[in-house]
Image 1 (cartoon, rainbow, N blue to C red):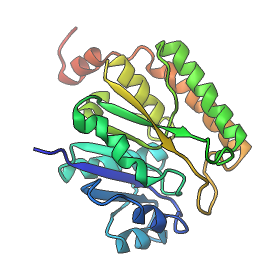
Image 2 (image 1 turned 90 degrees about the vertical axis):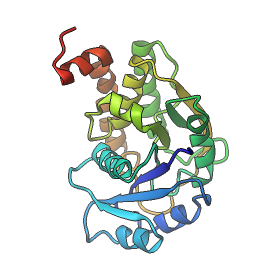
Image 3 (image 1 turned 60 degrees about the horizontal axis):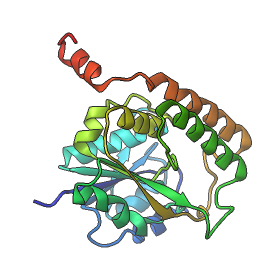
Length: 243
């Protein structure tokens, strides 16, 4: 039986770009698409609905919460694999088949879409790239594992997602996912994807130096919180079995 792939897109005031993003999703690549918006007043929701996506109104604030709520909805609809990407046009949907292929082959549990800036070197501001590098260096020291990117474009098996017991509901979502995946011994694939300038609007993080530095500081401390996470101990805590 083939795996069902669902796509989750957190999209906050992305009305200038979301239509183009949804139009570029390759036919047959995903079984369902969930767009998470912050309120009924956000015009992004109408654009998503008109394009055939399922629109979810976010309950808890934060990037991680949007991803998590979208993933739960996808799982309820029968997803076996959940992919994530941003709705600002910077992540090209044409790379989705390459992103999910290692999961479909059974070669990976989590796949990171590592951004290639060669075509558009300035698509991500220098301060944002510096912040990303700082977090990755901290993670490399803690995990003793080279992580190439902390991308918004990623995909994971549903069973693996449940195993990781994600707690970070803000921008630490991706970092926690990667740290716990390493600690759990999951197979992590890292595939190159293109990256391009966003289509209108301004990033909530990289749109300002202050936002980038603040997020970088938070994300640098996030690996420390989960460096000693033990999946067996966490499972025992949930079931009430002593280790």
